[in-house]
Image 1: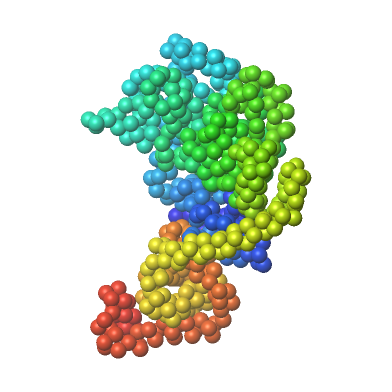
Image 2 (image 1 turned 90 degrees about the horizontal axis):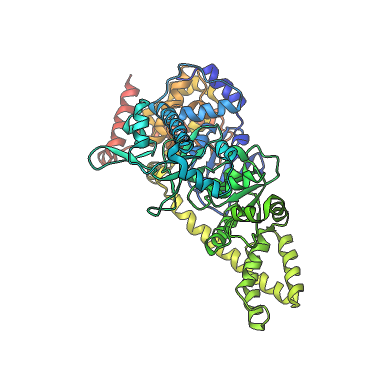
Length: 585
């Protein structure tokens, strides 16, 4: 258990608005803040941060909790890891000897194992067995200094080279499987996951080796092989070389397609390049980038797949507040090839001349039509209008509308009328879509039990919600509330769990705020508590209103007829009997 003095200090030094704003672009709305939820896809903000209760709640997907809960969900951490992350940001040390579960020890062991594997791979590269891999890297234009900087290594064509080395270091087969460094065999053994590959260690922001990427040197197997997800690594939430790029003095980050592009760009003097890890750009990665820059330059391959990836990335970055520019790479298929052909100075000019995302989309549309023919121009303008309808800024729409109409020598007013129609259709379509998307969440699994109880006993569940909100907001009221009502008298099983946790802390004279409760309540219960605190009408509850809520709860049992008692479900009946027994004492 964490000492109360530590929790009090962490609470004092942690502001949920500052924590969440690292991941979500928030806008103030009265006393609260809103933004697009990072836990589900949405176009209209339903995610709200409440500074007065230091909580958050999403009215779309039902996610909710405190700063610790948010860090757990957004970074895939356990409770103590989230606490340590927040403490580190606040310049605090977590007390020694704090009780922890086995996940932290497992993650620490995997990081230790990965570090040993990275050293072994690098030693392999520098030894006689790595001669062929070194020749490949030299042929790609890499210097020894670059190889050392990135810790590049080599996995030989062997089924047991790494496995036997790590066994000799005291690691077990199960630990190696958990780290995704070996694969389980059919007969209970295991074998190396990376074979005959140049190895790129993936390093997190704290300097820990969390995974590996391997470039095939042979003909069999995929060109690139990446570590699978492990307790310390989620490929959708990490970026290659961000450990270097986070410290860049340049105003933007360059997002490349692969490891070699990033390494070459860094070697060319541009320390702001990163890459995704064997997957297309994810919303989590885009939000991660938004923590370090307000501008990203997309530097994908110039082939069809690269152009498709560029268009997809532009759409993902729309929700992050990051400005997107697109690098056009002439006479080369990727940044690596361009740097080898033309050098860093020309690459610098490319960066300076990179076009905005809208210009990229317009040029791409033009390539699909014969712009010298009337039919081609009409087709282009129809697609152009649809493109403009998707741009939220009226100023940007006006600028590009004027520019394109001037270039094509067409009547701007005619195109503007088409755009107005498209905007109306889009707005109506979004309203219908939002309504459809909202329906599944109203019966979301996270609140299924509470929703059932609300449908059956709405008056009583509302009373217990308000009573919980009253105690969390006014803990001094426990002195008299605790004498009047017990947890057994609450109707909803989930609310009963929350009430018990609040009561246990208040009975011991301890705080029962969101951060204190996140250590004893699970994710679903914290989300439910956030929902209760976010519900209208629960902000300023008086003692007289609380008394009314208590009377309402008690009437649930006293007003029951024999027939109603006989038709009760088992859980309700147990609560009923326990309540009667409590009153007799």
